Amino acid sequence: MGILSKIFDKVLHPGRASAGGIGSPAKAAPAPQAQARPAAPAQPRPAQAAPAAQARPAAPAQPQAAAVDVEAVLSQMAQAKGAELNWRQSIVDLLKLLDIDSSLDARKELAQELGYKGELNGSAEMNIWLQKAVMKQLAANGGKVPANLQD
Image (cartoon, rainbow, N blue to C red; front, side):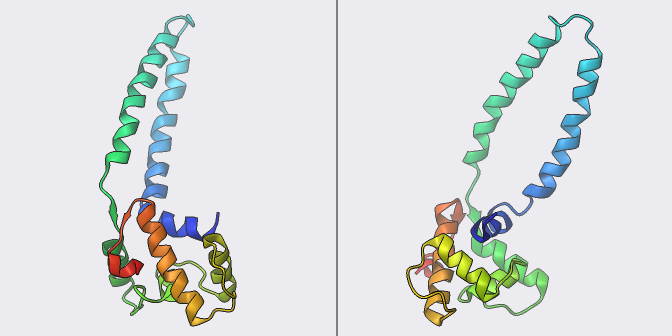
């Protein structure tokens, strides 16, 4: 998993890991009971096909969800941490806020993921570019990011 993917997970899908863990056991428990009941294989197959057909229409409802307000999510994280981090302007502070490695090596990796063409030396130019590029990527992938954070 790349650094940009980690950023997306923490900002755009903050509760996905815990929600998946809760949903998985609930699905696992009914499955063994359904398999233990049928004596004839013809009856369970139509019953299994109906829930699958019902599950498919529910899936398109997820993309209709409102865009994630990136500024609000990050502001809440910063408030919860209680640390003064300048995540709006500093890629290092943004990564620290998200509990992601902010070392030069990590930023070099992120720069390569995002297609940075300059020198990978941790310069102010590289860091400013990274900050803006990350915000643009968040906006392009379902986040609501104010224009001043993308410029």
